[in-house]
Every structure is written in structure tokens, then in C-alpha cells.
Length: 245
Image 1 (cartoon, rainbow, N blue to C red):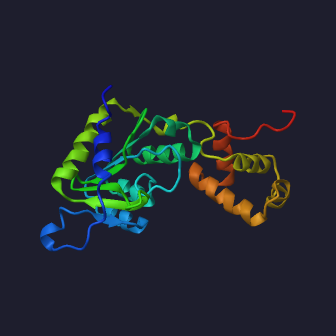
Image 2 (tube, helix red, strand yellow):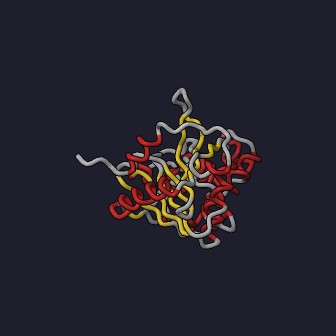
Image 3 (cartoon, one colour):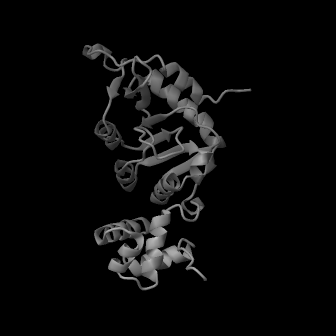
């Protein structure tokens, strides 16, 4: 059985360790290890024309490489091309499917394959970010490589997997992926005439939480009003059917 070529990157990188400070002559051959999301976002913000993302994740757990940040949407708005690769299972995980659908709607090319065996992000075919392990085998941040041989290897392997992946469009996101059960209950109560106060009492939450939740729902649905949010949710079949209905 032929191994997925991205596995080569994963296995080869297991031996990478954080580099000690070195002189200018070695700055491109040794990886810079980032441990903060801000550092990773800054690297992405410097993108000029394209970004490749391969993620093994099918959950929304904290993942420095595949978490999909605001900077990704800002880059898309200014014309940076994004190609994003996730496991097929990500399509069935509501929160992650919503994020991927949002990226697709913003203009990213999102595809999935049965298994993505390695995590990697490449910026402008000049910088490769790979997960780094500490000496005890635990997650040690993200190693940033600028060595052309490393970057080219990651790009080449990504390109081998990409053609066989299946496109994910915003319309492919399953019904209900955008809302939790509690959010659907709240929208249903408000759609049948409940006030913020009565809805809060029915759900056992504060009025402030009701208003904050509705604001978040409107943003995610792209609705300008509660009425429009209710219409969009109803058309998608996201509202809870009233008892006896």
C-alpha cells in the first residue's frame, strides 16, 4: 500500500528541535520555533500571493496551524489565494464545517481527503510552518522554515495530494452546522414572540446572554436583523419544531 506523501514530511520533521541562536549565515537553515498564535498570524500577514494549509484535525481543538484565523479572512479580502486541505470527517463536525464553509464563501479553495497525515502551512512558497515537538515528545510550537529544499518538498507533496481531494463548497455545510441546540432553541422562542426576558427565563440564562448570543447568531448567518436571522434559520430547517407541531 502506497503511503500518503505528506507522511514523509511528518516523519522527517519528528527529529527537528528548536534551534539555538545562530549567526546570519545559518538563519535560513535552522527553523525559528514560534510558540504564540500572534507570531504565526504575523507570518501569515506577510503573505503576498498564496497560502497552503494542510491539517490533520477534524475537531476545533486548539491547533496553531489549522485553526483558521481572522488573518486568513483578511488575506482573502486582499487577494491572497488560499488552498486548504482537511480530512473528510471535518465535513460532519458542525463548528469546523462552519469555519471551512465560511472560508470557502470568502474565496478559499477548500478540499478534503480521507486522511491528511501531516500538518503544514506554506506562505508564498517561501516559508513553511510545521508542528515542532519538544524533547519530551510534547507539542513544542511551530517551526518556521525558510530553507528552499524544505519548503519545496512540502509544496511538492501538497501538490501530489491536492488533485485527488474533493472540493468543499459553502453549500456543502450540513444543516444545523452553524447553530448549537441551545441557539436553535433561543431562535425558536424569539421567532414565536417571546421577549428577551421570557426567553432567558425559559432557557435559564441571563438577558445579557440572550442578547450576546443573538448578536453572534446574526453575525454568523450574515443577517442584519433578528427577523432576517429567523428567516434564514427557518429556511435552513434550523429552528426547533414546537411541541405538538
